[in-house]
View 1 (cartoon, rainbow, N blue to C red):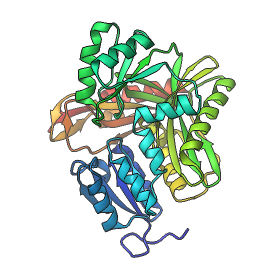
View 2 (view 1 turned 180 degrees about the horizontal axis):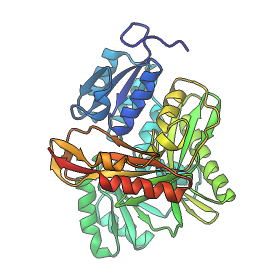
View 3 (view 1 turned 90 degrees about the horizontal axis):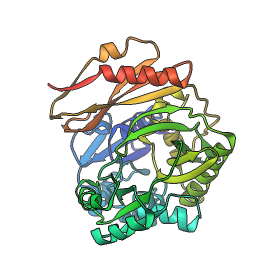
View 4 (view 1 turned 180 degrees about the vertical axis):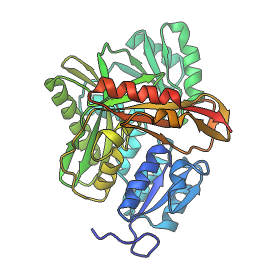
Length: 395
């Protein structure tokens, strides 16, 4: 592959569909290799737009908007970075010869919980939690009765906990249905209801499909609150058997989604109890829990994604103990500002990454604290301590 120069006719062009904090890091890594980056999102001045060569603001659930930008910019690679997107249009564009990362099929299936769960459980026969799909409150009641209480109700198209809730008893279902319909990022009119699994911990296994095959990062442990990640760490200790099972599950599903030509990184989420492993979800792009890799690995998940897209070598991926802790805004503001950054950075081996999001609707991840340590315990403490010192305020 020949690498050109940005803003010249020979540039390698990457079109980001979604320009959040992960997209921003992808843009930076692509630019380090001389790529020209065009960033798109539903609101202006999204994080990746602030570092891209050009940007567009439009509703990405409408395929005609995506097509218009693709035909104008003529990118070498179309890289989806969010869930709420017109995936059917990506399928059509791929048929016409445009390159969608990792593949249009992978993007369509993984951005719909129904599609990916049916592939994993029904076609590939991977172990999962018990589940049902529901398109009405009555169907939800029947599904919850089938999987048992407590159960989790999630919109079939959403992420980061948006629209997700837990029902402890039948009386909780009406509220859960209403919340899923109103707060989900994509409006499919359907939910998945999942039975609870008794697990010890959950991991994200970052799995890279590249020119030479499939590679795995060390497992990332994480903690969630209401379906949204609040901290992660790497490497998560686990038995050799559980790690092998995790890698086998990830290899099967990533291999199926990518086929021969698919390229990129996947965040494969798994539940683990002892030596037993269950598949949970999968993202066909860098994962929010994987932000820890910006300090724990020699190549971050975003660099690995870009290398895979560009068919570049991915050698061994060394890892050291590291952790991340999310920094949230719990205020509504159109002028976010940050205090305490100086205090957060006093200890060696500690970093803060401010995403540059231009507003907060009342509860939003705005930055992350990162840390390394002699072991996971020390790294987690440093990251959490640093995160606590940073406050998001209205300027």
